[in-house]
Image 1: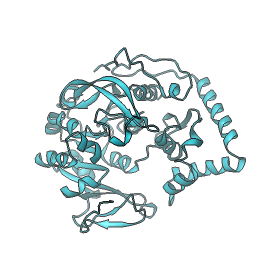
Image 2: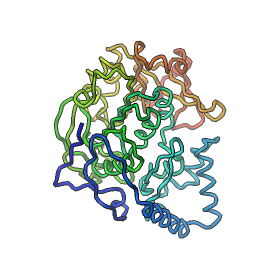
Image 3: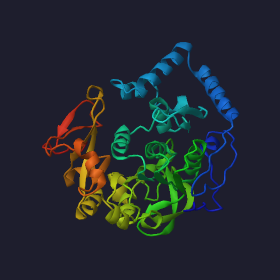
Image 4: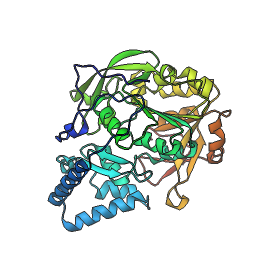
Length: 395
């Protein structure tokens, strides 16, 4: 499987270049990346630049507090998310506007990660030491085993791909799809510098029909928001183009006859329903566990409402589940709750499992009885609501 290069008229920029830091261009990644010989001097230079920036921004006590905050958040101690939001100044864009690139080690497998703190979510990853949607990481950890296969649709800079690669090991396979050129370059860097030879990269999008489409980035502060979907009106006048990108069907890029257990993650900014349509053969033959984002706004703009995704899976025997992750007292235990159709519009991400799949047995102990689901509402921290109470418009 080869990586499709971007259009020659739309040169890619890495996150270093976005942040004003020079870097050496790299060629499109081969199907199985070779181990990259990383220059330690670049790491020292990056660390020194970051320390210099911190010394100019923070007092000695604030620097100690910042280190303590990272330590606290990486251990997921009580209220760590709120503390990071408040004391990490996540929403203070002016504070981070001149921040240089920073390198960290992810807290799960020790992979080297390069972050651009000008991006809102990169700031979260800096403090968490990992991808921010911890419930998704919990699902991946519960479902994958050494030797399994994982498909990362919308791989971003590779945090989830690297997490999965650390679980499936050298006998497994990870296929990562990322269409946005600047983000793909960072994904490629991370896979190469960490020597993850079981990860195959695809600079392309996923849909139900092979084609080429323009990818666009709405707004500022989140490079991962690039999409093939129509742009919401609130971003009028704040949209940049990432060029014309090839789109493939998953059935044409993923081996439907591979007998190994498979998990698929889809976070493709409103193209989830179309991507599922292009995976029909893989889903029918391999019965993968699927974790899909259900962004109602973008899915509606595409004419593919989230209820359609629910129908597509249920029609072929799947069961949809909402994810919940217990707090510190519950040791962050994962719970899956059977989800009625009317609630998919109010979930950020949904897990689909087939009762006859190998994945079902792995998740069985996390599945809760119907009617016992209590949901943390993101808009009302600390409150809970049961399925018996219909969601309000705000929820």
